[in-house]
Length: 198
Image 1 (tube, one colour):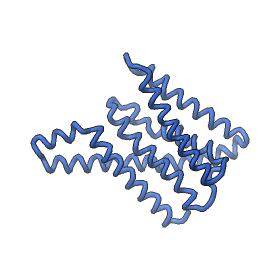
Image 2: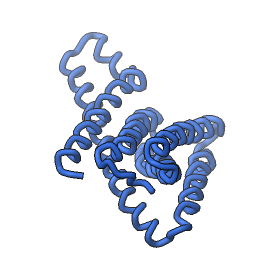
Image 3: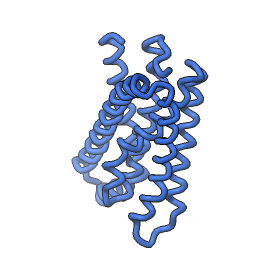
Image 4: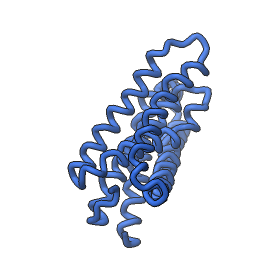
């Protein structure tokens, strides 16, 4: 990939992260916006818009760091584990889904397990969809690496929000992360014109 294409990928992903986080904040953090409208406070509103946009840019950068780290790990995995790498990735996907349900539920106090089940399986469903498209547009061998990236790497990137006390930031972060990760994964082979995830 040449520098022009890399800059395009970086800037478009950055924009997606900023816009999605800002739009999500209108719903997830609606109480914060309500405060600046009663009474109307222009500078506070501008501050909120800049804050959530900036937060989205940070989420986007985290997504991009995770993506390029994954590309490196994937090459090492293929070289070290060879034929076992696919099985290892599937195991890590299964373990990550289990972790998102069981360990988060155990850490919570007096909480129902169903929200954690829904969250984990929603991420899995989206990831399966993205992996299917990736495999259809490249080759069938791309399915497992794409699924691994969308489930495992996205969850690793999501850890700061999962550890936060506020549930708002859990949802505020996962939306741009998933979309940015899917965007990068599905755009890469178009930019390189090579089936990179084999």
